[in-house]
Length: 114
Length: 114
Image 1 (cartoon, rainbow over the protein chains, first blue to last red):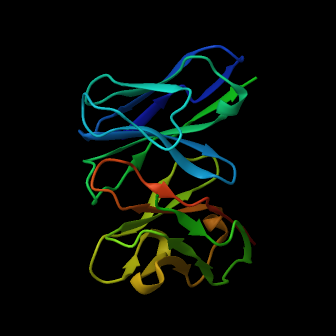
Image 2 (tube, each protein chain N blue to C red):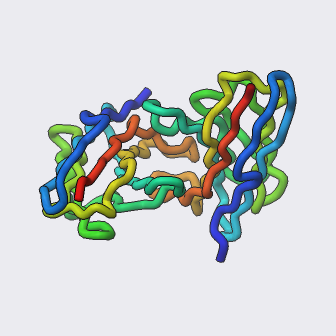
């Protein structure tokens, strides 16, 4: 099993450009998450999807949109990138969204917005 | 909203020294607690978790953590660190009944000197 995979690994954008970060998991998990990691800030939740067909905002959703394409895939879209979105983005998944919720993380996408 | 505090942002130790990293959370109800580790250039990996039962939990690579409910704490310990323990360590809490993700601390950057 590959676990959680993310593409691309690195990306450089100019301000105003758009892009989609892809995430897929092969563990048959119901819940999926997008986090961003910034120095000294830990990980902050952007959006999550409790199950196929549902998405909800997390702590820092502004400037992002998500799509839960099917049970395996959960994409994150930046419609008009800004320098403040320079960060490392992690996708994660868990079996379900309940309290007993161990999350498995992907390798991350390092995004720079110039 | 719940919060997680990690007391030390940077820790430098020599090999064979003992380690204790502090973690406190704010939520007063039922919580599940996690410690994740991020080695340089890698994604987050689960070190250990506490769901219920014995408050002293053992994880991988000789790490352990103690849940003290009265102190809202979940400190990470290791009796004798190795150079390979150099990494970023994150404490995280899940108190939600829904799939609303984990709340992470800001992380502790641990450097082990040979």
